[in-house]
Length: 75
Image 1 (cartoon, rainbow, N blue to C red):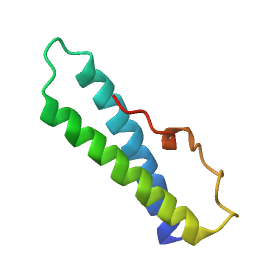
Image 2 (cartoon, one colour):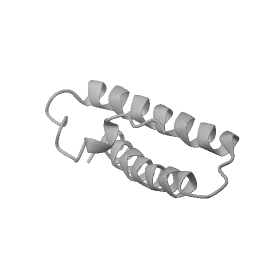
Image 3 (tube, rainbow, N blue to C red):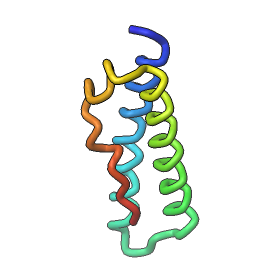
């Protein structure tokens, strides 16, 4: 596994965690808008980094892992 592949896997895992945390945050009775913005920005940056890594890795690795988290879901 190359460094870029390892980075991509790590970012995908972090993306899943951040999405779950944003869902939990959104379910709270009182939601802090700055925290929602933080998570939305974090998700956006991670998705962009994953796309850039995939473009460097080429089509051989695209779709090798579960990419469903790349579909944007803004809260």
